[in-house]
Structures are given as structure tokens and as C-alpha cells.
Image (cartoon, rainbow over all chains, first blue to last red; front, side, top):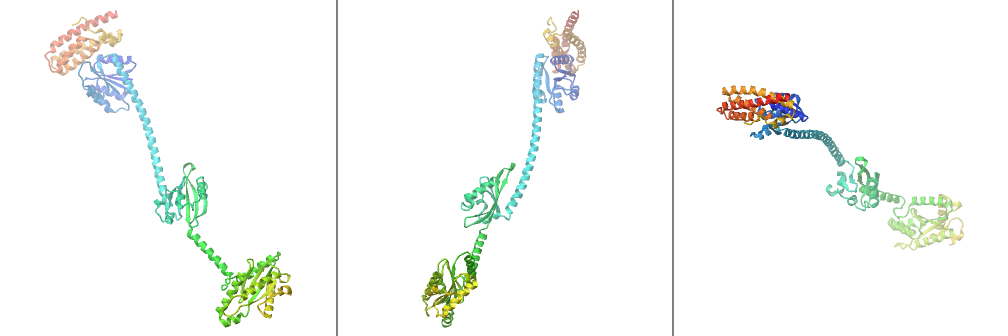
Length: 453
Length: 117
């Protein structure tokens, strides 16, 4: 250590300096307090050993001045006290002294005091180093905190911006966590539930939407989202409610999926309207091919059917066409009114419908004329089927007078291979039936077997 | 008064049995103390109690350091008197101090010359 000895009495100063050097230290001697302060400022000693009683400035005052000078590092101060003299040690300690050394000099005591001084200064140095390290750490921590606060602030701003965006999106959405618990719901989706948000969040998706809607299959799809695979516009419905659902994974740090965000359009109204529209369209389509009065297929439906069958017959299918006409219908209308006439047409249509096979086809051809197609039949069978219809019509109970119809039947064949020729053949047979007295079946061409049947 | 004016043990303690340093310090003590005593005599005769006190304190300090026990004791009596403002004992004290110092001087003279021889 570099030790400043402050002693106005030369002999003691000399002896002390020599003892200090003998213990391996460096000594500087000052003969009074003012000189000591000068040396202190210039040489920055590690320790000061000062006499207590000195002219001008005593030891405790020197302590105070040294401490007040505020050196960059700690200076250990020992005050010399006369053995047996009653000195105010408390005053010296308050002034800044660290220890005492008695006079006259005891070299062992000096050695011990300096050892203590060394130890304390060393601790002081360690402490200063630790403090410096601590301060550096503190500074680092402060910087880190500052960065953290900034990023938190940024996150908050981003969070609130995202939250506003999310809440005000014109698309109904919700987010869910890795346990498929609904985490957030935006206002758009919330309004479709007509419940407060608090009742909707923190519930399992299956619980919120119902197991009928979120089936096990759909839970699997959602779990796939958590694996990073989105899905787009799936139709989720439980027969009552319809949602168009898309879901995308949400990533946290390090691209780890933390949950998902889903859009769920409530398309219940749309789907209902679509269903209604489909029904209406079907009805409209049915109306286009149905006769308004008799509710059996109309002329147009008959033409379609016939042209289809001719196509099929060219591949080897056989069929017959019967044209029939209600006998004396004009007369009936004139006598009993159109409403009665209409009822006749309806009852004939009903009879045709009820007495034809499932594969056959009965339609209103126009006016009081009807057409029936018998499928997969030969001439004899067609004649029997037509004859049965004729009989059933004649059995219709009518309040005004009996109803009968005349039939003309033609087989599809080489000479009747078009719609026109087939219809004409049947029609010709029908006129023959009428000419022959009505209420009978006539067969096209000269097929006496069939006509006789 | 003891036959030996210096506490040899204290002396060799501070000198570390270095006879050269011992001689140096003893001779320096004699020289300085002789001057201090004449200063003390003047101050005491002038009734300058503060200076008397200060000089007595210094003489006491160095005397104790080298083990000049009698000189130190007498100087301490003077110092105590000066501190309490009692000048009545100064003359008697001074006489004792001078006598004690003469003993030391004689001792030093003998020791240093005999050592040198």
C-alpha cells in the first residue's frame, strides 16, 4: 500500500515511516494537515496514518476534509492515539476514521492494523468491481426493459388495431385455440347468435355450434387446421342451420400454430331460398308439361315422350300409340255446359291414368282428344289394353249421360317410323272407329286379328 | 530516577535491533529535544501556556517513541499543567525535564561512541 503518514513530531514520524516500509509498504510523510491534504490530492494514497493532536489541523479534521474531497476510491484512515489518553474515538469515527493505532508505536499492532486496512481495501475494490459489474448489468437490463416495453407497446398498438379490424370485419369470424376453444368472436358473427359475446367465447366449438353442425368429421378438419392445413368454404349444416365455413391456422413465434381463425357465413336464409327456388323451378317445369285442367301430361309432354321413344324404338324397342276421342263431346258441351264438359275430360283423364301400366304414358292431346302410349307391347297386347280403356271409359258414371270414346291404335313400325306417320296412322284408325259407329277400337293398317280382338 | 534513562526494550523494538538507525534516531532526538527544551523554557518564562503545552506534547511524544521514559513522564506533567492552565509547576517541571534530558544525552553519548568504537 501507499501510506501517507501525517505526524508533526519528527522522531515518531521517522520511526513510523521506517516501520511501514519494513512491512513492505510505501510511505510518504507530511508534517501537518494542510501538507497532508496536498499530498493526498496528488498521490492518492491507499491509507493515511495520522496523528491526532497537531497544530492547525488535528486528525479528525483531516479525516473530515479527506472524506469531503470525495476521492475516486476509498482511502483507509488510521488515527494515532496516545496510549492511556482519553480521546473521543467516537468523534474520530464520525469524522471518517476507520481505525486507531496507539502511541508509542507497537510494530505488531501496526502490522495488524495495516493487514485489516489491506483486507478492507481489497474488499472495497471487489465491491467496486462488483458494483461496476452490477451497474453494467443494470444498464443492460434497463436497455432490455426499454426494448421490451417498446415492443409491448407496439404489440399493444398492433393488438388493438387487429382487434378493431377483427371486430369490425364485415365477415363473421371467430378464433380458436389449440384445444378448439373459441377465443374471440367478432360482432358480425355475434349478431347472428343474438347472444352477448360473453356467452359465446371460452366454449368448445362443438359446444357453441352444436354437435349436429360440428360433426366428428368437421372436428377432424379443424384439427387439420391446427396442423397447418386450412380449408375453404365448407358447407356445414345440421338440416336447419347452414354455414359456409373457412378456417386458417394462426401462427405464433417460430411458426408454431397456436390456433386458428375461421369465417362462418350464416347461409341458412340463402339455402332456404335456394331450396324454395328449386321447388318453384321444379313446379314450373312440371307445369310446362302438365295439362292445367286434367293434371296429366300435356301435348308438349306427349311430343317429347314420343320423340324419345322413337329414338329408343330404333334400338329395338316396340310400342303402340292409341289416339282416342270422347264421343259427341261438342254436343255434350252444348247441352250441359262447358263445366260439365270439363268434368268429363277430367274423369276420362283420371280413368286413363288409373288403368294404364306404370310404363305406359297417357296425355291430353288437345280438346277432347287424348293419346296413350303402350310400351313394350305387340299389336294383340296393344289392342287388349286399348279395349280395356274403352270399356273403363264407358263405365264412368256421369249424371247427364253415358260417356264413350273411340280409339285408333297404331304400332310403331317400318311405315310408321316418324312421329307424324305414327300419329297419322293412329288418327286414321280413330276416324274409322268413329265412322264405324263410335265407342270402339280400330287398328291402323289391315290387321284384322287386332281389329277383331 | 532510574539508573537507565532509556527503556532499552522500547528502543530496540522501534529500531528493530538496527544499531545504525538506533544511533541516528537517538542523536536526532537529542538535537531536536535540546532545541525544543530551550523553546519551552522561553515560552514558560513568557507565560505562553499554549506554546508550552504544544512543545511539552511534542517532547513527550518523541521521548515515548524512543523509550526516554523519564523525559516523557516529566514532559507529560508539564503538558497536563499547561492544559489545565496551571503554570505554577513549570519551573520545577522544567528543572526535572532538563535533568532527565541530561541523563539521556549522557546515555546516548556513551552508547553511540562506544558503539562506534
